[in-house]
Length: 190
Ligand code: SIN
Image 1 (cartoon, rainbow, N blue to C red):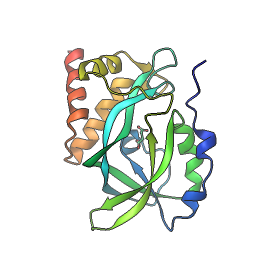
Image 2: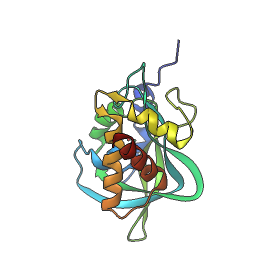
Image 3: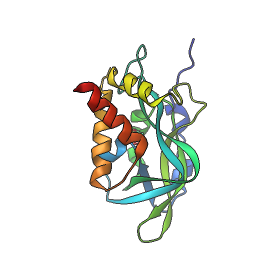
Image 4: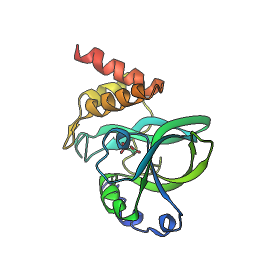
């Protein structure tokens, strides 16, 4: 039997978050464009040493257990930086977030670089390479093909890509991996 990727039990320990003076959540994928939790402030930020990749399987939102889609995770990449949105939240939002991000994502505390030059710790959901839902790298056309043909309870997998690509464009952020898949999907549709 495939081990379950459900991370809710592990993420339920809040001791690391409780120790923070302010709680900032970092969103780099759907947390940029689907903000279904309360927050008091938000800011564009960067995280250094990581890059976005469609290497995480989605069995619950943008695919099914039989036909998983592909969603984003962060992969370690020295010297790279990844844009995202930081939300100032309270501890109680993590019940909802842990449920939403339960398919293999573990919480991690990483340094966030704010535009004012400040660095503050932020909570980041990362699907590490050893999680059972991790699919890993594949040729870009194959990734786009899988996304094109996947759909789950949250909608078509391609919508995840387009909404994210549009949000990045609004912030004048270039992400070649995301934009190339966005382009290939539009090509397949036409
Ligand atoms: C995130 O957006 O920060 C995590 C990955 C996702 O839910 O798409």
